[in-house]
Amino acid sequence: MAVQWLLLCHGLVTLLVVVSFLCGQWPIFDGTPIQRIHRFLTFGAYDYFLRLIGYVFGSKGTNTVLAIESFCCDRPNPILQVIYLAIIGITYYIITISTFKYVPGYYLSGIHRYTSFLAVTVGVLLFLLTSFSDPGTVNADNVHRYLSAYPYDNIIYSEKECSTCKILKPARSKHCSICDRCVARFDHHCGWMNNCIGERNTRYFMAFLLWHFFLCVYGAVAIGLVLAGQLKELKVVYILTVYYGVENSFFGLAPYVIQWILGSYNTQLLIMVFLSIVCLLLGGFFGYHAKLCITNTTTNETFKWQEYISWQRKTSEAKASAAALRASMDGLSSERKPPESKWRTIFRRSRLEQVQVVKNNTYDHGFLHNIHEVIFPFSSRPSFSRSKPKSG
Image (tube, rainbow, N blue to C red):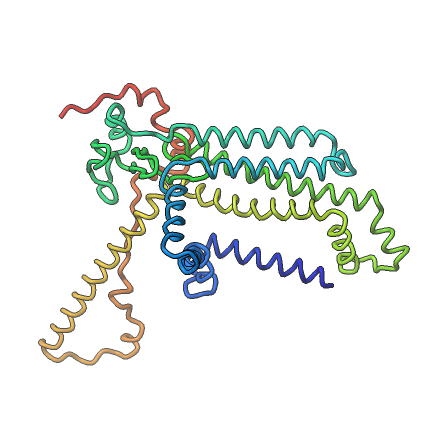
């Protein structure tokens, strides 16, 4: 029974941490413990760590941590790339030495020894392709082509010059301070790839996320089938029910089966739980970016739209407040009118409630066109290289 409660608590804590980290900033969680956990995981924990270092080692320790942070986060470096290769290599090695001896088994054929290696190899190749591909660098030679491909919407993008590159910034582009270059259709700088995600390599990045999601699902399901096969081959259920008198039901057998798995196959169980958690993270991340691709929006533009809509709403609310104040002043100065019905006053909507700000994304041309633009970016099409600069 203690094992059951331990696994249940572990699963609930893991779920709480994952949901808080991924979804804690959503408006629905405002003022809830999930929002506070999210803030702690993303900002608070590091702030407390800095304070602890400063208290123990003084300013020198804090400066050292900040210098390490600058090296890891503010300039190109392969640290996270090495960590990714280490994670996938060590995980596959542990699976090989702990699980392959049971393959082929009752539910799995021997071919999975080779398909698993092939799946991991494809995942690493997608990682390398995303890491070392050009994200869509904008320079003096191709800036006029990008200016034609991505016109300004004069809402969140207007004509301006990049203060670093000294060229016009095409719409949807951004100068990455880490890579020190302008990137077309800039989405974000990915530390795991040590590369920007932009117009030319968003397709590879999405393929990487989707493939690794299915890779984790494949690994977790395969290990689960191995454990189920061992349960069947060793006749554990038969022994428990016949020789130990355990009730032949799910709730009767579950505690004993879990205890048996923890005692005999704890490594496989831990790897399966690890793959399941990573699968949830990758699934959420892929879903978020898939939504962006479908609506032809980028992560960078999401923040820009949030700032624009917030500013427009505040402006509209200020105008509505001024109009309401003006109307009330006019009412006081005009002739006395018949009193308004109390029910009409109660149910009448406030002018502030009527304020609506609409997101007008001019780059959203429909589902099929948006997907086509991600898979076949403008700069990869023959028409892009043939385009000529507009004469002034």
